[in-house]
Structure formats: structure tokens, C-alpha cells
Image (cartoon, rainbow, N blue to C red):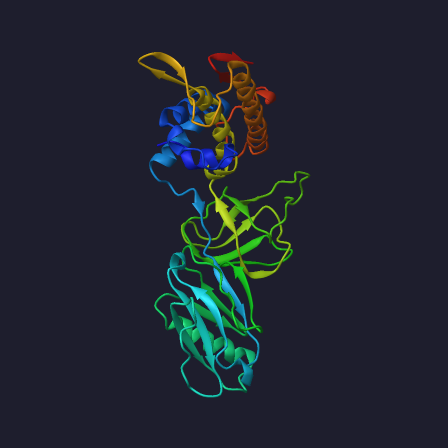
Length: 354
């Protein structure tokens, strides 16, 4: 299985997002991987990543995303006001409305699919409002909700947009996760998690850019210990949290996942484009090699094509330098990477460099 999809190649490397994905042939991707990726990261790491992809190994722990609803006390004018919440992939658009002064039902508003009533009294405080919303949402088969004081946490269905005010004005909406951080501590709490392991890469707005005790400024931390292997409820990372957040969104990746998603894909996309460009300008037919000419286009000449390929190659080299720096900085995470700048031996394109 290829490390990159045609859609990713077009999205990353092409200005025209309408470029025909059929032009990104599997052979071009394979050639780019063997010509550029394998020599750059080494055959062993390359094969490890290919095996992970082929075997559908989970390389990223996508965090559960929660919609956090901050509630205010009830009042008469809140009656039949509503906010918006969506189900999976926005398939159903609900109006969550309030019944305050009586139990009259509210009609489904225009552009909405259904309604969810929430019963309150004019004297309901913010905590009571949160409890009522939690009960109404949790009673709907599409949602799972909890409340803590005046905050309602709703597990956001896959592909659903964030809830938002519609005719309500006294509610605040934000996104959150299931991890807990404490400012000044490197301990992170979570519901039982079987994914997290020592050595994983961790990123979050609640974690620092700089690791403790180092001068390296890297946009991630690394897991240095876990409480229970295979059933982690607390783990420690290499930098102390900068925020206290009981609903922190934290992204965790295996080393190979970090390398693939944050470094290889950008580099590989431009390498594939580099391999594609001659085929986009010329075609092989029974009459020989001919230029591809559209109805309203003029093909570039060979000199211009070479210039464009060179520019594409230069862009790919920028991502190669970025990837190489990442591997060099994280040699402990990639022991099979041979850093030729540190006295190692590297075999590239059939030439052994000492």
C-alpha cells in the first residue's frame, strides 16, 4: 500500500486543486518512494513504515472531541430560545430549545430536522440549567453528555460540526478533549487508554514548545513514563504543562506516525509531482511520443518543463531538510536512522558515504 494517496499529492503539491487525481498513477508514487524516501530515511525505517501502513497499524490516537457548553442561569425570556447541535456528519440538525414558563412544544424551526426540549424554571441556576441540558441530550440516542457545575460536556459525533447559539445568547461553546493537564506538572491524566506508550510524541496547546532542561524548541513532547502498560490512566511527558485544563485536546502519535504524517507526506508529495510532470506534458501513442494539448491550452516546451521540474525538486529539498533535521534531533526515537553527519555510514542511490 502506498504511503500517500493521489488526493494528498494534489492537495499538498498542486496549486490547482482540480488537477485530475487519475494522473497520479500508483507507479509514480512507488517510484518516488523508492527513489527519494527509502534512500533518505534508510531501508529499515522505510520498510517498518510500509509494513505499518499495509497492516493498518494505528499510528495516531485521534482524541475524542467534546463540545463544552457553559451555561447561565435561566430567565423568562429564555423560553423557546434554542441552540444548534448536529449528529454524525451533520446528518441531523437539532434545535435544543427551552421550556421555561410553560410546557408548550416548539415547532421545528426552518432548516432544522428535529427538536430536543429542555425543561427549566425561571429560577433555575446555572448548575440546574447544565443538569437539565445534560439529561435532555443524554436521553437522545445520538449524544452522550455529562455535566460538572455549569459546564455540559457532549461527546462530539464523528464529522459533526460544533454546537452553536441560534436564538440563544447566554451560552458559550468551545471544544475540549478527554485529557487532564495541570500547569507546572508533566503528568497527564486520561480515561483508560491502551494506545499510549513510552516514546510516543505528544502535542497540545496546553503543553510547552520547549522540553524541560533542554535548549531545543520542538513542537511536541515525548511520553517518558506510563502508570499501567496497556491500560494507561496517567502518563508523564518531557515538558511541564503550561495550562491547567480538565478537558485538554491532546494528539498522540507513534514515532513512525509522526515521521510519516508530519514530514514524509510533504516531501513525498513534491517527489511524486516531480515524477509526474513529464507524463503530464507528453504521451506515448502508436504514433510515438506526442504533446498533450487541451482545447484551450498550450503545452510548455522542454526548456520550460525542465525549469518547472527543477523548481518542484527545490521545494521537495526544503521538506527533505526539515525531515532530516527531525530525524537527527530525535535519534533516540529512530535508532535505525544513520546520521551521516554524526560519523555514521549511509547508503544512498548505490553510493556508500562515510
